Length: 379
Image (cartoon, rainbow, N blue to C red; front, side, top):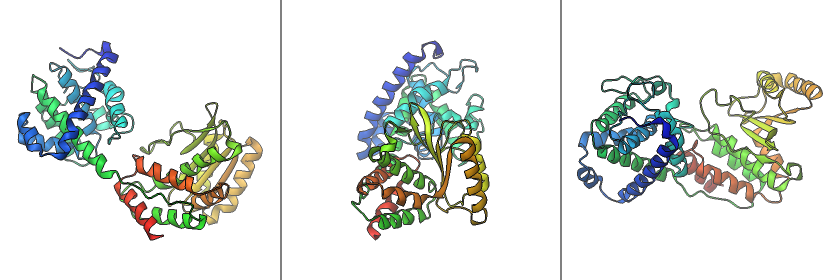
C-alpha cells in the first residue's frame, strides 16, 4: 500500500513525531559503543558502516535518506525507491522532506540543505532509486552509498531496519553538530581600532570554505546594534540573514542584508569578499533596486573600490540618486563597521552579536569558530 498523498498534514505530523523519537533514541548512543545497538537491531555490519559513512558525508543525500527511511518505518509497505508520485506506487518524498525533515533539522541545529534535500538536480531528476542506479555525486562515494542504504531498508518488510538506520544517521548528525559547537570568546569594550584589527585578522585566515560569510556576519551584527540604538531605524526590522546558496542565491532578493519597514525593503547591503567593487557591480545594483522602495543601498567589499573605476562609479551612483532618489553607497566593509561603531555608546554589543551569530550560523563551521578564539587571544 502506498503512502497516501491525500493526508499530507497527518503524515507530516507522524514524521515529525518519529524524528523526535529518533533523536531521543540517538542521544544516549553518543556515550556508548555502537556495537550493541547494531547487534540488538540486527543491522548488517556493512550496512551500518555505509549508513554512518553516508551520514558523515557533507551532501544532501544524507537528509534525503532521513526522509525515505522515516516513511519506510511509518509505512513498511511503501516502496521508498519510488520517491515521486509519478512513479508506480510512488509518493511525494520532497513534500515530506520540506515539511517534516528540514524543520526537524533546523529545530535541532543539525546539518541540512537549504530548503529541501531534493533541490540537488541529481536526485530531483533521478528515476526510481533501484539497486544498481547510478547517481553522479561529489564526492563520488555518496551516490552508491545512498542507493545501497535505501535499498537495504526497502527490502525489510517490517520497517524496523529503516528505523535503526534512521537512528544511526541522526546520531552521526548530532556528533557533527556537537563537534562544531565551540564556546566563543566575547571581548568587552574593545577600542574601535582593536576591533578593526580583530575582524581583519579573522577574515584573513585561509579557510577551506565559508570565508565570504564572515563579512556578512559582521555587517549584520552592526545593523542589529543600529536598529537598537539609532533613531533613524525606529520602526524598522532586519530580515533574517539568508543562507548562502548556489550562484542564483540572490534571485528575488534585494541584497545580502535587508532592512524592512512595514514589510517593504528600505535599506539593503550587498557584500563582496576579496573582490573590489567595479562599475559592473554598481550597474547591477541599480538595475536591482530601480523598481524597489529602497532609499539607501550599500555595496561593500573587504577589498574596497576598484581604483581605476572609482571616479566613474561615483558619477554613476550620483546620477542614479538624482533620477531615482536611492542613494548608492560604495565603501569597504571594515571602514563601514568602524564608522557605525562610532555611533554606538559601547562596542560590547557588536562583539556579542558577532560571536552569537558566528556560534550558530550554519554557513560557517568549526574552523571559523576556533579561529575567532585564536584571533581574540592574539590581541
